[in-house]
Image 1: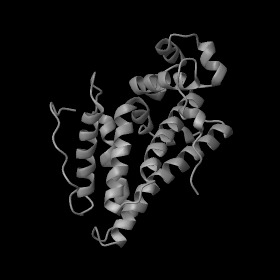
Image 2 (image 1 turned 30 degrees about the vertical axis):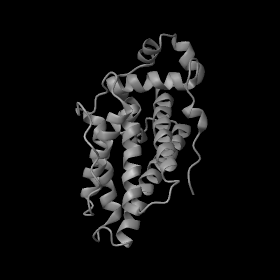
Image 3 (image 1 turned 180 degrees about the vertical axis):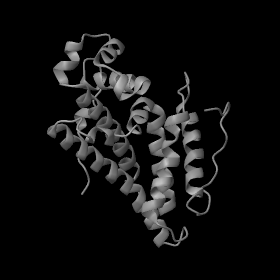
Image 4 (image 1 turned 135 degrees about the vertical axis):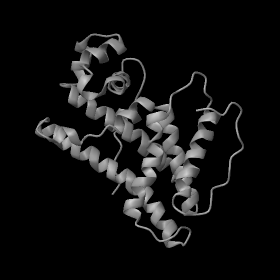
Amino acid sequence: MSSVIDESLLEGGEGSRGEILDAAAEAFMRKGFAAASIDDVADILGCTKGRIYHHYRSKADLFFDVHRRGMAMDLQAVRSCMAEERAPLDQLFEMAVAHLMVVMSQIAYQRVAVQGLEMHLAGQTTPEQRKTLRAILTMRDEYEGLFAGEIERARAAGAIPEQDVHLVVKAFMGALNWTTIWYRQRRNQSQAERRRIAEEIARFALRGLGGPPAPAAAPAAGGKA
C-alpha cells in the first residue's frame, strides 16, 4: 500500500511552514543535526525563535519534518513519472532522472536526507518522535521499493542479468544519492543543463545493472556540474 503524502509538507510561500523547513534544511545541511540550532534556523529565516516554536516543540521534530518533506518531494516526483507505461529499463531511467532532478533543485533537503536518522533511536527521542521516525523509515523503504520493483521487472523480462535485486537496488540508489555529496548549485543553471547531468548519472547507474545503455543525450553547452 502506498504512503499518502502529507500535502501540507509541500506547501511553500511566505509565512508557511514550508518556509521554516527551507531554512531548517539549509541550517542542517551547513552544520549537521548536532551543531545546528533553532537560533541558526531563525537567523536564516530572519525571524524570532518564537515563530519556529509555534510550529515545532524541538529541534528533533523540525529535523524529522525536513526529512519528511524531502521524502515527499521524492515520492511525488517519481510517482508522477511512473504514471506512464514504459519498458522497465526505460521506466527506471525516467525514475532515476526524476529523483536526480529533485536532488539538484532541492539539494539542502536531499543532503540532509542522506545524513541518516537511525542515530536518533538510541534514547534521543520521545515515544511520539520514535513513531514519526518509524513512519519516515517506512517511506524510505517504500521509495527504495519503487526502484527495486522496476529492477525486478527488468530482470524478469530478461533485460538485465540475474542478480540479487534487494542488494543491487541499494548500490543503484547509492550511485544516484552520491550526487548530494558533490553537486553544487550554480547561479542561472538551466533546467535543461540539470536534465543533462541527471541523464548522464542515470545512464551510469543503469549500466551497473548490466543492461543495454540508455540512448545518449546531446551534450549541452558549458557542460559542467
